[in-house]
Length: 441
Image (cartoon, rainbow, N blue to C red; front, side, top):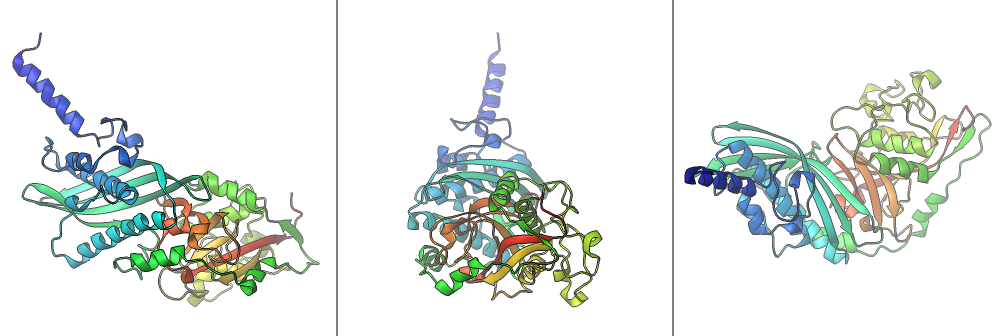
């Protein structure tokens, strides 16, 4: 039989375990272990606040910080679904540091945009599932830097009626004041956020929502571009581009990677999009040099149409190096498709601006994150998996994409949910077919 002191000790231990429900093996309420997925509305805002901070019984700074980071992300996702009931402000601190304050302001505007977007489109997130991975933290006296990967699955009542997914890595800056840890800055590995031109300024939510919900009138002249047909080739065999095969590949790998294809950190977007296009041309993607890729072995190291993972062509001068990496570089791929020919091996199609309005399944959607795009300034590539509405009058809410950036940053959701950037900054590579020296198997 336990003595009174031992009984009290057991009770304290059980209380600690119940409070720290953000620990990987702890459980709270009906959501189960948070490490394995939970609906963000299954906890109240008070629950999220109770799960972190110095008011709990932990003395381990690393545990407290992990709880705070998870609570911030979870309450922010809950805020998007129910902005009247959730807020992450209690977890943050304004310390007068302009850079970090700008980060927090931008991050909040991002959630404000999503919270306004769904009602404006008459969409609703009916359920979600949030998981965390890869937490790391470095604590130095009263400052800390922590990172964690969010894996967020959600279900939206829109024309697509399918599972949506978003994964990204957050990096938090924290400081301890009066015994409490507070978040003072937050960044992510989103493609636009890691762009050299990116500035932490709050999103103009009102303007972004107006654009996302604006009914675009059909432009017959722009729509006509989709009817492009290649002239026949006397030298090469025409290969069919099956968008359904490309989409099946994108759906298989949108939240994982094919180890056959390597890439530099943070540079997986066009690499992934090229894989999707290759799959659409009938490629098995078990070899990075096999046709429908266009390797240097096939066409030589100075050919303009080299399209092979991590292979370089010397066709363009060093000042235009980005065109020489057509498989892995957005500008290179856009240029490859723009200059495609029935008498040149590789995928055939067109590269155009105004990418959203005419987007079709099987396209590679491209974007410049700031400023007017040009053939030499594209920064990110996404693969179009689903569309709704009418070609020639589509908006960001009518186009669903699969996208990669890094090992931890991927998406399977509408462009409107993915980013608030203007439609004027998008282009598209429309793949019609391919031409090769061998018969398509």
